[in-house]
Length: 463
Image 1 (cartoon, helix red, strand yellow):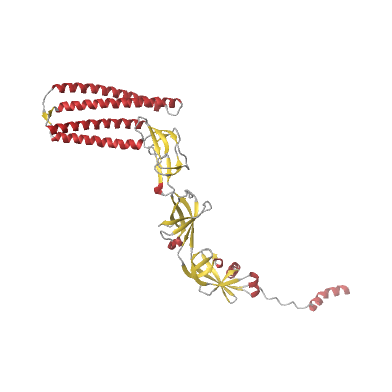
Image 2 (cartoon, rainbow, N blue to C red):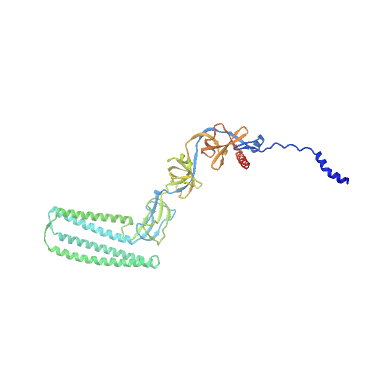
């Protein structure tokens, strides 16, 4: 019984005899008030807070932009066939370097044969017109009387003789073309419709030859009749002028056909093969042709570009717009380059991309070694003019959203202060507003200070 009583009073006795609880130790938690943090010397040492005094100085800022190499628009040539026809051969591939006049492809076209025949007919007109003009001029100077109808008959006979030669040439061309195409049709390179069209052309040319022969027979009979008539008529100056006008028209027609022929073929043979050459020196960027395909003058066969001068198309931030000037020197670098190249800013875009907040910049670069290729990614570095102001180490800046801050030390307290940056060079930033010379800014431990300010803001919000 006495043991139970003793057990009941034991807690009271222990409680009365216990020593008082010790007082709480001072808290090491930083005192935070809005954008200000206070730390004890022990905590400062533990975090490793370090501050430096900012000073006024000079900066040689650089602007770095990522860019893409492109061929200049005025240096790109789309090579097409001047006539429709079958592609017989391709002599260059994508990536090949070419010189002006290098053969790129050969095309066989029936149009070239027709053009050859038209040019021969035009040559015959020029010869006949020249003879007529010379004869009338001499007779007008000598005052000789002759028969106008007789001269017309002689001119018709000359034309008929020339027409026969042209018709014979056309028939020979179409027959030769048909002979060349028959093996291709047997191998399935050309269709039966194409072969039938060539056969039809041979028959048309044969009929034209027979017609020309009939016309020559009529012309000979006409000359024989007029030769029997002796009626003199004076060659007037008007007739000489008319003959000169006819000659000039024939020459103009001949010159036009010769220009078309020169553009379509390099030789004057009866071959219907067109040789397509590179219009200028450069590189073959694309080849869209295949042997056996049908060449269309509207569809390019090759894309050739002169890459001795290239563009670097870069994007600059809209905030860098005041720093960009036409003619500014730019250094082009890339891991793929053996050495840096130099260019200059040619144009600065007028429209800003609202989503990316950037604007296009075009830099022209001399590419004599051919190191830069279209599509290559490079970096463009612009060395901007010297600027003076308050310089702060880049490490001192704390970014929060779109704004930047520094922590300024003022006797045990650290104030988070917003700053406006004018420009930077990678190591330092030039402050436009927010600091004065001599201010102590934190360059080590600022991230811990930022965390304390955020924690303090959350605590105030909860209260």
